[in-house]
Amino acid sequence: MLLVTGGCGFIGSAFVLEWLRHSDEPLVNLDLLTYAGHLGNLAGVAEHPAYRFVRGDIADADLVGRLLAEHRPRAVVHFAAESHVDRSIAGPLAFVQTNVLGTARLLQATLAYWESLQQPEARSFRFLNVSTDEVYGSLEPDEAPFAETRQYEPNSPYSASKAAADHMVRAWFHTYGLPGLTTHCSNNYGPRQFPEKLIPLVIHNAIKGLPLPVYGDGQQVRDWLHVNDHCSAIRAVLERGAPGETYNIGGRSERTNLTVVNTICSALDTLRPRADGRGYAGQITHVEDRRGHDRRYAIDDRKIAAQLDWGPATHFDTGIRDTVKWYLGNAAWVESVTSGSYRQWIEQQYPTPRGA
Ligand code: NAD
Ligand code: TYD
Image (cartoon, rainbow, N blue to C red; front, side):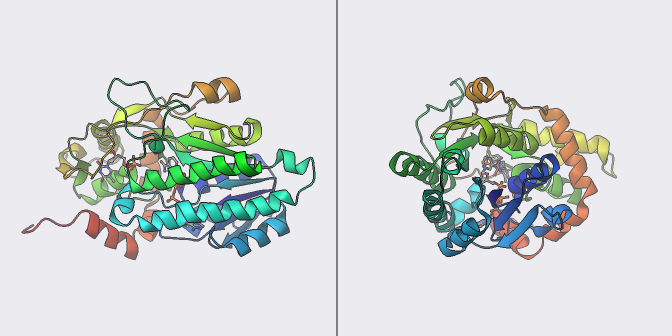
C-alpha cells in the first residue's frame, strides 16, 4: 500500500482519484486540511474499500510512525506543502514550518520505519518527494530549459523552502540510504485547483465580472502541464525511477501569463458569453508586480522521456478548455472553497483601490 501526504489538495487529490481508478492497491491519505485541503475533493472515493483518510500533520512524527507501523506501505508519496508563492511572500515562516521542518520530521519517521524492514521490502521501498521547477530560479528568454543538472537558485520563500526539502531527501539517501526520489514539475492546471493560483483565479473572477489581475507586464513565462499528466509522471517515477535520482516533468507548453489569460477569456467567450456581448479580455487589469517575480520557467524533459518513457498527453488548448468547463460546471465546489479564509486572502492580496 501507499502513504500519500497532502492528498486533499489540488495535485494530491488528482493523484488519489487516478490511483484508485487504475489500481486496487490500498492508499492512506494523511492531510492536515489547511485552507488548501478539501475533503470534498475526494468525496467520490470516501467509501472506497482501498482508501483511508487520516487528518494530521506530517510534522507529527508519532502519528506518522504509528501509521507506517500499522499500514506498512511500500512507498510514501509526499505532496503536502504550503504551495502558494504570494502567501510565502506575505508569511514565509509557515513555509519553513511545513515544507522544511515538516518534511524533515516525515523523513525521520520514514527512516525509522524503513530501517525496520527486511529484504526485499527495504530495497523496493520508495520515498517520492514531489517538488517544483521553481527551485532552479529564473531563466532568461533565450536560455536552455532546466535540466536535472541545473544549479539550485531559489528566489522566493516558497521555492527556498522546497529546495531545502529536496536537499534533505538527497542527504537522507546519501547518509542513511533511504531510497528517496525527487520530481521537479512545472506549473500544473486542471480541476480542483484552489482559486488563489492564476488559472482558477482568472476563471472565477471572469464569471463574477471582476478584474483579471495580471502582475506587471504579463510577459512572465511558465511551462503549463495538466495535473493528470503530472500524476502519470509520478506513477512512472514510483514504478521505474531509480533511488537517489531526480526527474524534471514539464508540459512542453511555454506560455506568457497574458497568453494564458487571453486563452481563458476566449474559451469563456464561447462557453459562457458575457451578457453585454463584449469579450472577457476587457476585464484584464495590470496590477503591481509580484516581489522577486521569476521571469521564466521551462523544463527539459529528456531524462524522464528517455529513461521512464513518459511524456505529456494533454495539449494546453484542450486542457484549458476542459478546465474552464469544469469550473463552470462545479460552481458549488468553488462556492464552498471561497468562503471565509479565501475572502480574507483576496482582500489582503488585491486590495480595493482607494476611492473605488
Ligand atoms: P495544495 O496547496 O493544493 O495542497 C496542499 C495540501 O497539503 C493540502 O491538502 C493541505 O491541507 C496539505 N497540507 C499542508 N500542510 C500540511 C501538513 N503540515 N501536514 C499534512 N498535510 C498538509 O498544493 P498542490 O498544488 O496540490 O501541490 C502539491 C505538491 O506539489 C506541493 O508539494 C507543491 O510544492 C508541488 N508542486 C505544485 C505545483 C503546482 O503547480 N501546483 C507544481 C509543481 C510542484
Ligand atoms: P501562480 O499560479 O501563483 O503560480 P507560480 O507563482 O507558482 O508560477 O502564478 C502563475 C503566474 O501568474 C506567475 O507568473 C504569477 C502570475 N499571476 C498573476 O499575474 N496574477 C495573479 O493574480 C496570480 C495569482 C498570478
